[in-house]
Length: 285
Image (cartoon, rainbow, N blue to C red; front, top):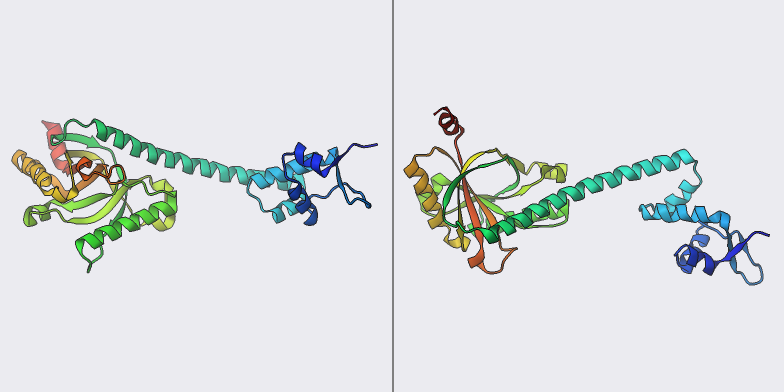
């Protein structure tokens, strides 16, 4: 006589609730092999173990119960196709998570770097590799503060839609010509450095590139509202040294408002790219 297992024994063996087994019976997904007509008790056989394992596995992969029911009626080739498809989905998810991990590691390294900076105010020249940036131009007709906050919120929305997290680090683009003329810092757009592969087609139109090259850089500490004096110092240095540079100035947060609530602890780097012809001439000397 074959060995039968009560619904309680089956549930315990497979670490599944009795209520779930009853529900599977109701929807004809997984029915007991025998039901006692007098007591109405459900009984299962060893031969059904593998079928329940398959159901649990497919459910773990995220397949709806209705779809599982149809798949159980198909042959092994269809199950193989299903598993291959699920593996592809998992591979894509792993790739996405690895990229997100890279983004978060970069954020952590930036903050760690900021806590160790002991050369605030010093002007240096360094090579910076190519960067992809998610950039948002300011809208016309709003105040400077309104346009800046709106663009940063739009950036946050795109980040949250594509990688589920807004990690801060919103930078600003400034025209050196306007700083010299107006004697104040006025941002033209906001941006964050990103990994392009993380973003959908809709977001790609907002992603641009900052080409690799030599940059004149300086870090400053304190609130953004008092950044003009630091921009002025860097521009005066460039003019004194007669270094041909591009017009764009990039203001990159190292320790930003998401990393500290004390604006006196904010740490920011100003970067201006050296024109390539100057680099080429320097190499010929």
